[in-house]
Image (cartoon, rainbow, N blue to C red):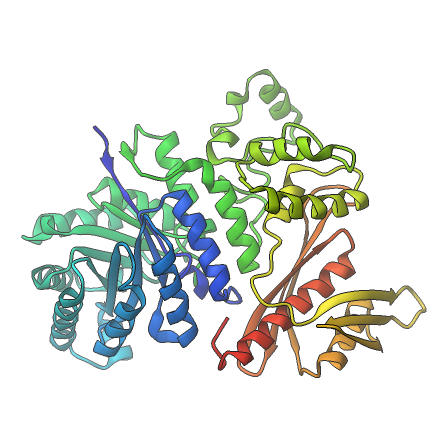
Length: 508
């Protein structure tokens, strides 16, 4: 029988450290719900000591999400560990995840401490964490650049202190597969008590080896893999969950292991994370990019039409990316819409469906045809914040030899607020008009736009980052009108900002 590999999902912690990917508490909770449906073994919900907002978000996830282990990260500092425990103590299955640098460069340059002092700190931290819960993970940060004898020493000591999982991270993505797999094998061989803990790996993608390193580690005895949806994370990102899972599924001859992952939820999870973090999925991304099952070469198309296996090694239905059964229009009716939602594995009660149907009709009136991707975009086009300002009216003027201008009317409760402004373009003019109404000094950071489907009437998604004082907030908007989508994204960001400021500057 195949051995089972635990999947430790860190999108809400390491993935959220991607520049510009800050999530608010409700968005983190929504992703956690989807991760539970995906059936990951562990959800690393956050780093509670980092901010009051992250503490509250982890607490909410711990209280509401059932099934997976809920983990919180902490440094080897008693205050950190106590805060992390306060965050996860109400979870059905809580875990404390403690870490400290293990490489000489980290100990000397970052901590300015000698190896023995760091080892003592690690042991004391694990003992304290173990006094709070029976499930304690310890990570040797930057292990792949550490002295191997020191790694053995630390692993043995923290297991004796009570660690149930020991993580060997490739923190800076330095390792290559053969050497990383060999390191895991030697740890299991040379650490006498290694069999008393689960050996985990956490790989970054700086050299493009994160998935390969993770799989090689599993082949050599690691039994927990730490990974993120879409491979997001700091710098070049982390090991991509979907690539690891599908690699095991497609190549059991090399990876004869099983996981508990519900593979049909991969596609849906990928799209939700992309939507809420504002990080687009590259079109050629392995497994879940929109081109992963597309063929343009005539030779490829001919082969696929005769037999999909000629050029497709992955069935799209495996990850829940099945093709839509029909194209919908404004005249399709409720039954057809219900049928499509069920085909996409989205369940709704009558009240939720009635509200969604109204949004569908509004979109269908603008578009000739509504595709599966349009429905998915509508399903996750939800703002997880209180709408302080709402868009009532928008009129813009643009073009060559014309001064771009915008008229914007916003609703704040029952109050109607209007402003007129010019700018370098119609979007800039609209943003300036909104700034006049809200009286906020907003700086625009990133601005991303993509078409959900093809065609002149395609639904457009806009994701932006706005900056205000020390806050960096993501705003999202969607419409068949790109200027309207851009304005909705700006308002979404402003509404989040106002809610953040109203809650004692808790980070979103």
